Length: 312
Image 1 (cartoon, rainbow, N blue to C red):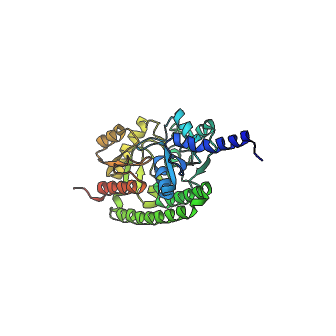
Image 2 (tube, one colour):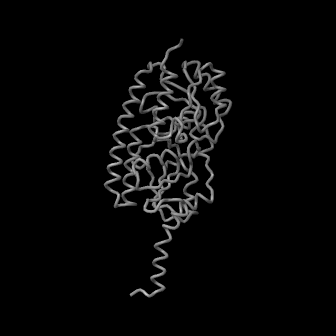
Image 3 (tube, rainbow, N blue to C red):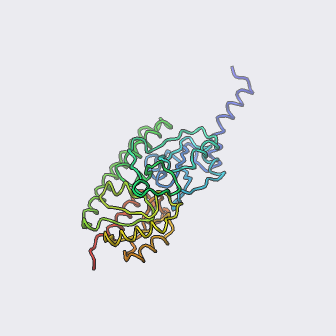
């Protein structure tokens, strides 16, 4: 039989997590989930639906490569039941943050089952770009086939964290996977409209390797996988030579990188500046890439616009 003090302690323990969730603005009854960056947050919202409250560590237009966690982030993690991360060394700062937060949350790495590609830039040119991903390219979401695996892993992690929501998570995931099938068909149709000899472009950093392999567009990047390393003058000169010899039609800017480098390369090579691509982060909700599907549609639309037409 519980005495009064034991009963009080049990009640206090039971109230602690809901009160903490309340303090963070999480509605009662919702599963508190933390996603490391905006693209993962969108996947979690799609699969979790009404049952989850998602908090992002790195928000829209934020660069997860160079993010510096805050004390508030540790507090957010402490109140989570599930933490969703990309892995493949994309969030190099996250392991320390999880440890320092003391969170009891399950950490789900959503690239599980994905075969990582090697970084072309590191291996072909032998550059040290100052940001070690262990040779693996972490930007696996740039292929819709991989995005399907992300969604399956998120569905499974949500079911473990909240078994009562199993039917809802399975239904939401199935509906979203059908949308991803439609998206992939649209991307392939768009690429097919680009003349084969024009399917190449320059981007600010090496984030489109999976997109290139999946859809047959060659991307050349003056920076390695990381946005925190500057491209050397030798890299830039090599890229400019490559643009001229291979007749690369366009240079694209990205939402997470400084535009000056791409602008310099366009100016010195004669390639035209294409539209802004979204690589490592979504735009704000009211922007052109507020969700993963909107981001992929926006990117392929800009790519087709810049590469699709032959020389005037």
